Every structure is written in C-alpha cells, then in structure tokens.
Amino acid sequence: MVTIAALVQNLRKWILRLLIGAQLLLVAQLLKNWLYAASYRLYVEDRIDTGPQDGMMWQQFNIQDKRVIPQIFTEGSARLKFPVQFQTASTLWITAASSGRAEYEIHLLENGFRRLLYRREINGQALDRVALLPCNGILEISSHGSFVWSDLRIVNGRAIAPYLIALGILLLASLILLWKSNSRRLPHPDAGRRKVFLFMGASITGSIILTFFLLEAAMQVFGAPAGIRTLRRDLGEVSQDPQWEDSPRYGSRLRRNQNTALQWSGGGDIVRMGFIPPAALSTAPGPYSLRTDAEGFRNTRVRDTIHVAALGDSFTDGLTLPVDQIWPTRLEQNLGLPVQNFGTAGFGPQQELRVLRDYAIRHHPRVVLLAFFAGNDIVDAERFDKYERSEGSVILPKTGWSIKKVVARYETFYSFSLLQLAGNTLGTRAAGRPMEGTKVPYAVDQNPEISGDPAESVPGFDRGIFTIPVKERTLRFALMPPYLQTLTFSEDALEKRSGWQLTRKTILEMNRVSHENGARLVVLFIPFKSQVYLPLLRRSFGKEDLERDFQFYFRQEPTGFDSNEMSQNRLAQNHLMQRLCEDEHIPLIDPTAALQAEVESGRNVYFPDDSHWNAAGHELAANVIAAFLKSHGLDQNKE
Image (cartoon, rainbow, N blue to C red; front, side, top):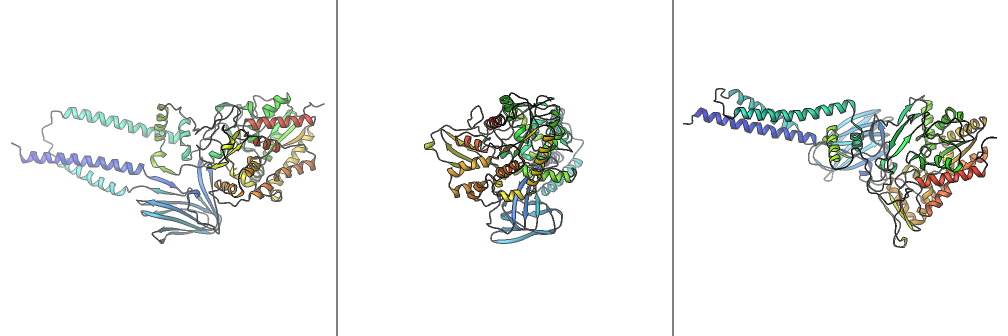
C-alpha cells in the first residue's frame, strides 16, 4: 500500500525534475540571447538621403591598434539619418572626437513624432551609450562642428536580466526541495548505472566546454593561426604582415632576405577598400613568389654594379604580379643590362630620395629611373613631410577596408572561427584559402575580356563595374575613387599644393645626387587608371550618365562631377611634370598615350578590380622605357 510519505517523495522528485528541466531551458535561452546579441554598424552609405546639407560628411576605414575602424567624418552642420527597426531594446554606442567645441543631438522619428533622446556638448573625446526602446522609425544624429565618429553602431539583444532572476528563483527552489528530501529512501536498483551514465555524460560535456574555453583563451592571448585570421578579415582584424617591417627612417618597408609566397586575398585594392562588391569582378593571379635581397628590395640578389636603378612605389616593386612580369624585369630582358628594382609599395618622393642615397647610388648606376605615380605621390609627399617634421612621432596613416556591418556575438569568438575553418576543410576548401568570387575569362596576360559581338552589346555600368564593347572585345573595369576625384583638380590647383612643391624639390635633389655620382636621372610618369580610361568612357557614355555612374563610387560622400572639367584636368600632372623636366633638362618618359591607345584597342592594361598595371601594362611600359633609353643613348655603359 502506497503511503502518503511515498506520494510526497515521488511528487518532490517530479517537481525537482521539472525544476531542473526548466533551469536547463533557461540556461539555454540565456546563452542564446547572449550569443545572438548583434552589433549593427551605421555606415554613411546606408543613411537616408536628406538632400543638400550645410555640412559635409564622408567615411573612411582606417587601421588603429591592429583593427580596422570604420570612421565617419562630419564638418559643419551635418545630419545623419538611419532607418531603425528593433523589436527589443537596444543601445546606441557613440565614440566621438571633436577638434574643438562641438555638440550633437540624437532624435528618434517615429509615427510622425520627433523625440529627443540625447544631447551632448564636447570638446575633445566622448564615449556615450544611448538606450533605445523597441522602435520602428528613423534615428537622426545631428552634429554641429568637426566630428570623427568611430565605429558608430547599435547593439541589439534580448533582455537577460529576467531570465537570470527566474533562474535564481528556480535554483533556490531546487535547493530547498533537495534539503527537505527524504534521505532515508531506498535506493533504486538502477541508481548506480544511472550515476555512471550521468557522470560520463557530464565529463564529456565538461571536457568539450573546457577544451573550447582553453582554445579561446590561448588564441586571445597568443594569437590565432593564419587560417583563422584570414576568416576573420570581415570582422576587421589585422594581423602583422610578415613580409613588412617598421623602419624609423622609411616607415613601413619590405623585410630583407625573404623567400615566400604571395596570393591576392579578397580581390584587388578597389575591392579590398570596399568601393565595389567582392564578387563583382576578380582576376587575381594565382600564387607566386616574393623574394627580397639583403637590402630589402624585390631582387634575387644585390649586385655591385648595375645599369638602371629603378625607384618608385607599388608600380615598381610590382607586388601584384610575379617578378618576371613586372617592368623592371622586362626592361632588363629588353636592354640586356642589369636593372635593379628599388621600388617599395607606399613610398613617396622623399623616401625614394633616401633610397637613392642609402642604397642605389652605391651600385654606380648609369641611369636613375624615378617612377612618379600621379595617383598619390603628391599626397604621399605631404604625409611623409609631416612624418619627418614630427621625427617619426606622427604615424603614417594606414587604410583599411569595409568590414561586416552586422555581427552576432558568437561570430567574434575564435572558437567559432575554428569551427568555420574545420567546416571549410571538410567541404574540400583548403584552410585559409582567399575568397576569389566569380571569375571573368581572361587571357594569359591577365587581360579580362568577354567574347561577343560588339554590335549586340552596349556600354553598361553595374555596381561600380564599367562594361564597354571595344573592337572584338568587351572591357570590364572599375575605377579607384580617390584617384578619380583627382581629376577635379586643375593644373593651377595642383601646382599650389605643398605636395607638389615637396615633389619638385625632391626631384631637383635627386637630379643633383645622380649628376654628382655620374648617373643620369630620368623621370617615368605613371598615370592613374582614370587618366587612361576617361577618353573611352566619355565616348561610350552620355555626359549625364557618366557623371551619375561616377557618383556610385562616392555614395558615402556625395560629390558633384563635371566630366568636361575632368577631361580638361586629365593631363594636369603630366603638364606639371613636363614643365619641370624641361626647365631642369631632365629626360621624361610619359607612356600615357601608349597606355590609352592599348585600352582603346580593347585590351586592359590595369587590373579590372585594382588600380595597378596588369602584366600587359607592365610589358608596354617596359617597351616604352627601353625604346626611350635606346633613342637617347642611355642603353650604353659609362665610358
């Protein structure tokens, strides 16, 4: 006969089981709410366009403390409006800095009402958190003054506190029931076996959790493997590039005595910097080697005596291609004389002068060939001047790339990236393989083109990619926005810039150093992509259509364009350099016309998704340089 005590005992047992089950469900819900809390980054490109404003705004992605930080810059009276729709409470994270006294206000526009959420006056830096109730409307940030908004975002996640309170109550009830349970009840015949199974299950589960915890802690402290770091690029993580080192004299430069492999990751620089979508176009070359000599330049070895010393930036070191396809190598093959590559990506005129003095001139060159890149050498001169004046305390800026806008908390853990990497490996994709996107057919010289009948195709523009039928081919390419904007500057405006004056001064000093050491300075003018492709674009598109297409690249910072004015300014830097070289009797090589003719024949000379020459561009440049040197008797050794 079942006693009342036994019934009570069974009831307590079932209640305890229900309480434990409820606690497990609450813990699972807690973990889910915590892990799935998401950050929604506010980018200028996603704002609601409110028409003309009194102030200015633009966005950049800069590298700070080994992370890519999205930054919005506003000047004057600016207004940012973003659509917001959250069913649960969230928080607006604000990290702002002002160069002087400034103020901002946060409003929520919902159901026809405009409600003030927050107002702040700052003079320096501010870190604020603004609570947002469930909402469906427009979040408006109005600023007055000069602001830099760093990683502006909304953090949204379901409430955790109620679940914690409920879990505490259930846990307390469970403890009370256990305390009052009848400790003298007879043991169940299967109790021992159950305890073993429970112990084994708890041990396995605990071991798995502990393993992931230890792995996470180790990767947080000591860093993650390269394959995991590659996967976390979209999270804005930046790992130290083993091919580069920091130098007090030069800034960032290539390491010495390297012999490693390179491969494009994430497309060309126009893709990596977030100006066009990653899958829109990709023609990245496969893996190729990077070798540097004992002086830290892209040569197989240091040679005591050379004929040509090639100075320049990324167009000269040619890190976007195998070494046998870049112009210094092709020039050596053409001339049959030693050409030493002293180029380094990111270098400007002043750094190149230091390279001439520190390295190149000691090898007794017959020709010092300075490659001037019209895209950014003037800006690089201004930046390095600040670096020099500060004696290295002002860090040279490093540009990042557009990073993921919506990120759940679980995606931020290295353990999750580890599981992703394992999944990719099981899915037959090599660990750490770079994303390549959709490939466009291209020839051996990496000239992307699409076969087709030009009569049946028309010029088009889609997500930053121009498509133009030319002869028997169809060219596809994107433009680099900062260089495109350079076409809005006239020759007079460029000449007045401090960067041009610094460049001019540096070239004169290079000429003097070269002459005193028995060498002849020759300037190679390297045009940026927009200079070469603009005539073809103007013939292929109507004025209004072309100017509207250009606006796509500046959707983060609306900019007015006049294609007629841009065409007038297209050769502004060519003319500046021509006048300088004529005045100082410095030979000048300008392949702009030859590159333009090649493009108008239907052949790309720049990578479609990158601002640099492809193999065809390097080959053409080498041929132009060799012909010039031969015609001027500079292919002969010193007498």
